[in-house]
Image 1 (cartoon, rainbow, N blue to C red):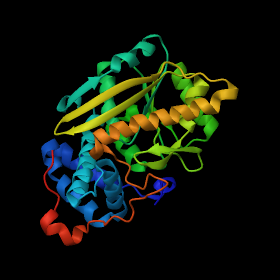
Image 2: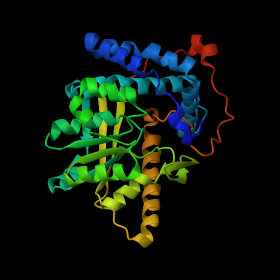
Image 3: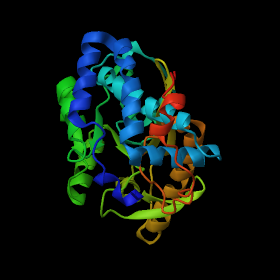
Image 4: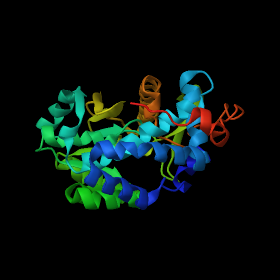
Amino acid sequence: MTANDWKHRPEGGGWFALWLIRTISRHGGRRVGRAFLYPITLYFLLRRRHEREASRRFLTRAFGRPATLGDVARHIHTFASTILDRVFLLSGQIDRFDIRVNGVEAVHAPLDRGQGVLMVGSHLGSFDAMRVLGTKRPQTNIRVVLDKAHNPSMQQLMDALNPELAANIIDAGMDGPSLVLAIKDAMDAGALVALLVDRAQPGQPTMDVPFMGGIAPFPTSPWMIAVMLKAPVCVAFGLYRGGRRYDLDFTMFSDGLVAERHNRAAVIADCVRRYAAILETRARQSPYCWFNFFDFWRDPDDATLPIPDPAAAAGADAPRRVA
């Protein structure tokens, strides 16, 4: 399973798993819901081999040593924790969490001038935690670019928990010109447009850049859109720190990407390299928040490392409690 094949992996657990988490959380609260994360973690360790191997490969790169089964269990548990918290975040229960925000004032500046802003993120941490912006600045129109066809379970969850947010989704599955036009319309209206820029849609152009000791393909289309729209761009991360805590970090990447036709390719290439470097720094600082559970690299050079067998080790190395 390569970086180009991530869309062929089914959603882990699908609608039933999200419905189950939602039901337990609504009737039992977050504490009861978190108790169910341990059997969910065990399920992924035992049954989802591709995700287990991808976790082990990434953590091996991040740690500079072979990742253990306990490392992989903690990684999956962290991911499951953010999925559980999604239920509460999407339903507006921000007060349940200790959310610390850094650097958002720089993002407010162009919004105050009536400019739209592209907020670029990744599958590092929880982008749902960015919902806190809607409570701290309710006048901001937040539009999220999401591939509805690949995320039907997520779309149904949004429809159930936050119909207003669901209605504001910009479908990333549209053809290129329609997508650009939809983003432009939102930007012209002064919206904060959030999109993930670490995965390319099938058929979209990518650029191979150094990333965490290997070569990884990053999409170029988001940066082409940013250049075409001359948009201010901020980089955002919503990193889960355990328990109830999330750290939201915002950094202005550019006050407006401008390029002439003759140097457009060079400007886009520079953006991709800069962003990959930022993402690598953050991923090394918060490795358990990396939620790309597939072979992200062109050269999975650590593929020969031994993969822990959870079935054989379940007695000694069953998922232990993590924050």
